[in-house]
Amino acid sequence: MRIFYIFAAAATQWLGVAVAVAQTSCAVTLAPSSTPVAADGYSVRVIAQGLRQPRSLQFDSKGNLLVVQSSQGISNFRIKDNGGTCLEIGEKVDLIDHPVRSRLNHGIALSPNGNKLYASDRGTVYAWDYDAEARRVRSREPQVVVRGLENPGHSTRTLHYSAVGEGYLVVVRGSGGNIDLACGDISTGRCQMKAFSMQNIPRGGYNFTSSGIRLGWGMRNSVGIAEHPETNVIWTVENTIDNIRRQGRDIHEDNPGEELNSHGRVNSTTGLNYGYPYCSAAWDVERIPNNTHIQVGTEFALDIDGDTKTDDYCSRVEAPRLSFEAHTAPLDIKFNGTSEAFVSFHGSWNRDAPIGYRIARIPFRQGEPVASRTDKQAAINVVTNSDIQRCPDRCFRPVGMAFDNTGRLYFVSDTTGEMVHG
Image (cartoon, rainbow, N blue to C red):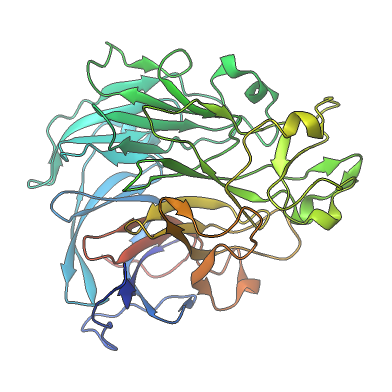
């Protein structure tokens, strides 16, 4: 049976304020089957096992940890805090008792007051009235909030509730496959991120394609979303295209770069084109043919089914603010205050040598990454695998993350097998 971990990582420095260094021993310890390695100044400990396909995490207003387990629903876990990284998982409550439970696969969000719970399957976004004190939803039947999200291929519909204005739920819809030409047509609604007002939701919910505020399009698979707590700018991490060719040459081993993109505020964005499927960001410039005007992060034209898009066309789409190694698969992004963002890299499959499989941080200043657009060292490792050659099948692969109110980072791995616990 495949079992998975929640890890808690505690920094010895958070927002420049020293906190206690974690204990070296705890009353309850769980041994990981693969060994996560924490960077200097951090510690890491397994605190739970027995999850099945865990994807996303969300703390509620009472400090309970909500976990989406793909095709299993949403579970509410109490956290027993013994200080530092000495944490225990307490009683679990399954929140959803409705047939949609078996379809929920990734997305989760709470309204700012904590009274509305949102979750998604590949076609629909649902809402329930939620009681954090009682640890339950108030009605079995969900409300349909957004519909019309179905397409083949990428099935996750990440959710984020923006802090801006009257209350907007942000929803991301990815592509129908590695190369989805429909994403080049803005009218299809594919490969787009939109925001929907949670005031006066229409009967039957919004239609994703024809409704909402478009925050971006040409986005192949932007699974991670976060909002900077000071500027309220929306940031995403993008999983870019696989098996690419340019001018007849296979350059997929180290291209294109994965992306960190900025989208503006929900109520002031212009909904830019981020390039997919015709353009992607450069990572290993030397391997790209005809690279005279290309540097790290430059959007360049790909060989896409005989399409005639050029580098000139790609120069007019929105380039990423930062790029990461090809195929590292960033799946979540969370801000730790205003000074840094953490990104989970699920890890590669589309290259010869494994890469990714880590949690990294990106320093921010005044709402922007400190690193330049061309910096290849912008993401600083926080937690890595001790032996990446064991990946992907015998190592941890981080997915969703969440910070608690003391600044400790929790994350889940969706691959690690172990004896069932709890």
